[in-house]
Image 1 (cartoon, rainbow, N blue to C red):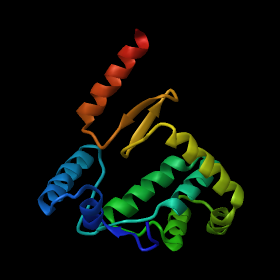
Image 2: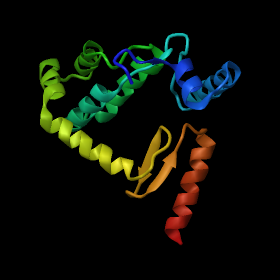
Image 3: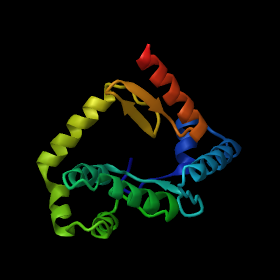
Image 4: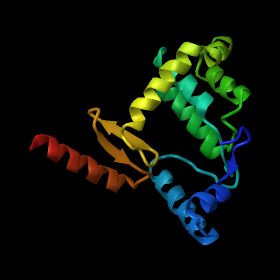
Length: 167
């Protein structure tokens, strides 16, 4: 993906050859599913997919401070609700400050080759799972729960997983 991101409509037209109507229906369904999960998605503000590599680097870094959940919540709000470009360093550093971490240390983390190497090792490990959609949850290191499903569907899939573990 380019540094400037890609229009969501262009992405779905190019990747999946979706019509405007199919995209609109997908977005309507996604907004409803997200709302049921307590997440606000505003497609009037969120028109682009952005390169999230820097955000992933910082997610790896904040894990060392046990701030990954808080960082993720701020990222979700910034991206889905406010439509902010989370590929931009200044946006990410503001989130870092909002969760109480030092933005100068975070800037150094973005340039740290060890963090990049550790992130790439995670990516390689996850690629072995053949993940095809987001979100994806990996349970017990082997079971995948994939896609933006309804709460009832996730509950059903978790129930199936627990039954298989008990057997």
